[in-house]
Image 1 (cartoon, one colour):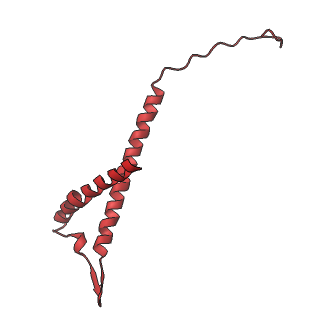
Image 2 (cartoon, one colour; image 1 turned 90 degrees about the vertical axis):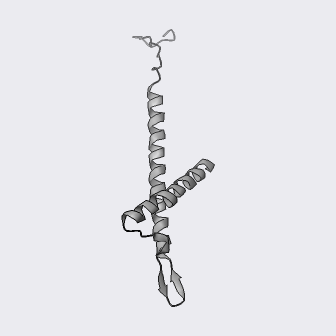
Image 3 (tube, helix red, strand yellow; image 1 turned 180 degrees about the horizontal axis):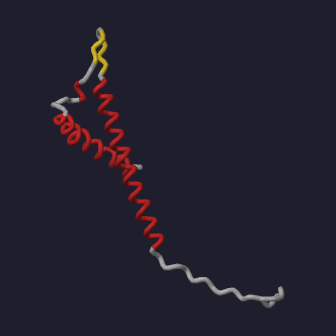
Length: 99
């Protein structure tokens, strides 16, 4: 749980500090955090909502790929073990206590 929280913070920083400014530069210097709608005295910051949704999607995608990688590693490690040797069963034609 603690590692997941720390990983989320790292990915959130990656998105917020590196990816979103690059995306903003690609689409003409648009900064999502500064987008808002002013209705009377109320300020609706829909840019922050867009930023949070993008952060969530990228964090979810990163965690998804991390879990897929761990599952792949565990599956290959599990399949790389030598097979267990099974003892041969005695075959008996009659059912008796000696078999």
